[in-house]
Structure formats: structure tokens, C-alpha cells
Image 1 (cartoon, rainbow, N blue to C red):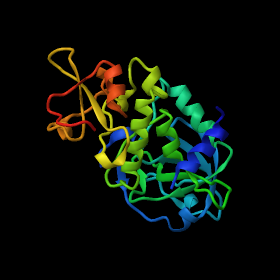
Image 2 (image 1 turned 45 degrees about the horizontal axis):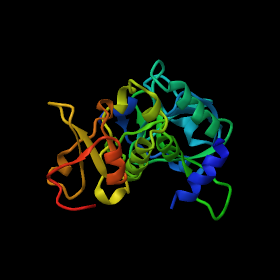
Image 3 (image 1 turned 45 degrees about the vertical axis):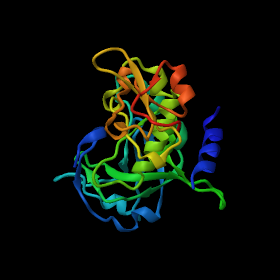
Image 4 (image 1 turned 135 degrees about the horizontal axis):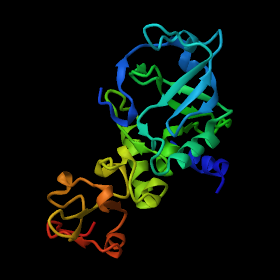
Length: 261
């Protein structure tokens, strides 16, 4: 399925910690930055790209270090996701997916709380305009996460899409999309699967593997230890959308569960 078709499907569905390769070092308001459209001139990897600045753009005046002022191209780091780094599994696929999606196109940038990171990159939520009055713009982070090209990484204090991206990640894991179905060794930031609230996703059954023996149990939201169960994708643990799906994967219902979900 081509990217344009995927985008159409995705848009129809739309209604500091140092994680994920960036550390917040400055909070600032760049005024009109969020009101402008910016041309993407280069995609670096699955979560970083460059936009073209101009004399009218506040981006042009963003100070990125003690002795360097941003001119020309400006680096942007997509908030709340982490893509594979160079040399890691699925790096090329992730980079190429973002390149096909936004390179050579204009995007909207929206600030959350943070301003720039320690590398001088703008930290922004990124949207690809739909071009249609009756369709929402595409949240680029959603596209990358729900297709398995990136992992949802909530970073203090930018939490606007935390739960929403967690939902998308769990669907990608359940469908074994992208990294989740093609990498024997997961990239650096993909080992800990984002936990979610029960009401945030249809696929909330937790498949857990005992650390003492290879026994596999699945836990429903009404199971006593559900909130304490953490999912480790590197060990083969995952979320399921139904009990039948969990059982087909070799997991047995935990005795702590008292009813059918």
C-alpha cells in the first residue's frame, strides 16, 4: 500500500528525561513559528528533519548554541517518538518512511511546552496538512508509531499526545508491524513497551512470560496484578486484542482473573 493511501486511511482515523535521543534544555515561545508552514528540505532519520528558514520566519532567529545562530535550514525533532538510530534494525525503513511522507512538502509545527533540545533542534509536534477542509491534518508521530517505524516515548513535560500514541503503539505491536515484526534485536529505545490505561485501547490484554520458567500467562484488566504487569517486547511479551488471540499464541489465562473480558 502506498504512502498516499496510508495517509488517507490515517487521516480518516484522526478525530528532562533524555529518552528517545533528546533532552529538553530550554523552554521558550517562538511566537509566530506555529502559524507558518515550513518546507521540509531533508529527512535525517525517522524522527528528525530539516526545514527551510527565511527572512520572515521566527525560526531564522532561533539561537541553538552559545556562538551559533540558526540561518537557512533548521533542524526539527519530532516530539514524543524515537526512531531507530543508524546501524540499528529498521533504520533505513524508518528514515525512508518519513522521507516519503514529508520531504519536499510543507508541514505545520506546533510547540508543546519545550523549546529546543541540547543539540539545538526545535522540539515540535509535526502535522502534514490534509489539504481538505473536512479532514484533519495528519499527526506525523502517529503515522510513524502506528506503522512500527518509531516508538512512542513520552518525555517530560510534553505529554499532549502521550495516551493517543500509546494506543497506536499497541496496535502496531499486536499487528507485528515494522520494527515489531521484523527485528530480532530491537533498537535501543524499543525494549520497554509503553503501558496504557484500560480505556485507551481495544488491545489491552497483557501477555506475560515468567522470568523463572517459560510459562506464558495473559492478564485481563480485572486480574489482580494487571497494573503491575509490564510488557517487555524483547522477551516475546505483547498485548492482545482478545483472549482467543492470546491463547492461539500459547498464553494461558492467569488464575488471578475472575471473569471473561
